[in-house]
Length: 287
Image 1 (tube, rainbow, N blue to C red):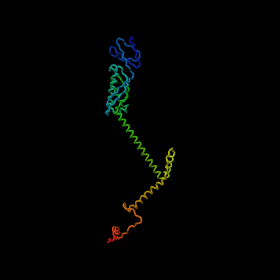
Image 2: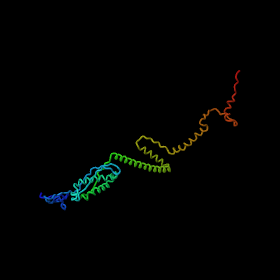
Image 3: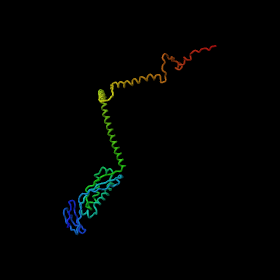
Image 4: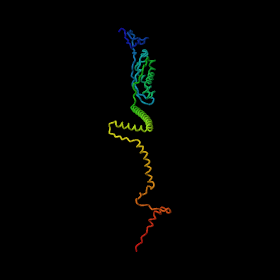
């Protein structure tokens, strides 16, 4: 009314007189403009959070991703924001979308997933370059919200992570077995030096088994008895086959009560064996 206008604390005003911007910026508070020739344009100086829609692009390592982000910007020069660009909100949104696609194409999938801070800084510089100078808009911060992976890529990454965990588990198990074998070798050396240690270990095992509520019956056998059997087994094993090798494998067992015929030294053995059969008298035929 009567040309008085109120500018709030978070706004600044630009006066257009007959279509031409007047020099100077109206500060917050009560101000007066000519209602016939002047028109006041208020500009919000607060930080604006603009959501960048999800952009589908191909990374440098040929993986298709969908990435969305949030851009935080504010107006630092209201004259440029009003005069140099028609709708700076829409313009910033379009620049953010194209810049996001460009950054995705220059980055790898692993970089987008693990190096978010570096990607955010690069994206901020790319968006801020065409907006701050000519448009009077400064990008304060850019954050990548979500990176959507294809289902096939998710399954591949899951298998890769599972294989990596299995590999680490096998390495840890093998390392534990190696250390346990070294300790067992040291324990065996100590027990071999002192046989009483082995007996004490045997008694300790018996006590541990008896402490549980079970029906297991343990009969401890002295180690010296086992060693005696180990030493006696080779002696008896060598004595038994000695008698069998004299007669041969095909020799018949000896018949009790019969004596083998003696063979003179001057005759061959075959003659001596057949002589008693040929020397038998023949009975004359009856007339």
